[in-house]
Length: 387
Image (cartoon, rainbow, N blue to C red):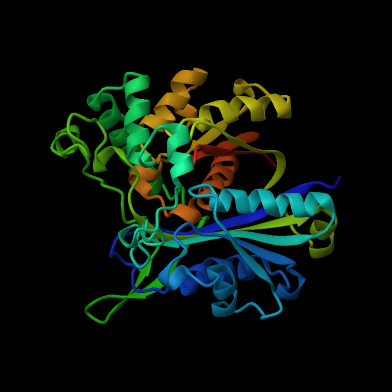
């Protein structure tokens, strides 16, 4: 079996809801990262075997195969195929894993793993048609699990209750996310991964969008404490949950032969690909168990991993991960996470991989691990070795 390498990974800076990226059609937003990845690596686009595009809300402008439409909106030749996939929040992390599997099987040599989500223009849940009585969960499913519906917000509160996290502890974690993201931005830690995008303002001017819009440089415990909980008596608020975000991302995956043929210099070797599933009601807890399984399969221990990206869908998720595994917060989400930087759903997996690869490079780490919770009670884990 051949080795799969990640040659490069890029992302747009996160755009806030109705922010700087909201004027871009989703296909055009996806094309931004595809074009930047190909251009800066100097690869012949005709050599690309496939584009695997993650997207969660496949409705409106993101319907009718946004992956293929992103290729058509890009500078890539129309001979480059694409597929759009949905593994909920792990969609583009799954893109990486599918791309790596294609390369490792020997069936393809050059694959782009990508993701896009315009949460402004295709609002979360707009593809469910609940208002039309189109429930995605059948009566049989609801009866099996004893619920009337499945909700990530309910799941987040359940995790907070199970692991006995107070509102104050969640807000402290959220504040640290903003502080780390602000420090990373000021230090230029994201400069190599972010693709600048020229966007038009309401005043008709053109500005360059190259910094994550969601970071609150003046965040405080007092400010977070003023936010109302999402449910009465709950501890989850908009302040300790991930931000609605527009963005895209793309990673270049190559076989060993392709690396030689194209004179590429890989950033990392893929060590392990894991996907697991568990309780769909608490839903967001699966990364805790998936991480242990991935480490065991890779023959590594938690202490062998230098840096981790554990998606901050809600503060209780990485906090429970740290508590369950007795992890070191100083090695987790060191540049902040989705609470500060935003969570553009289908684009987040590759986005976090770009951050992880650049963190390993900047700080001299060897192994990195990426994981995230997903709707339906699933989790992806990807382990890489920096080169």
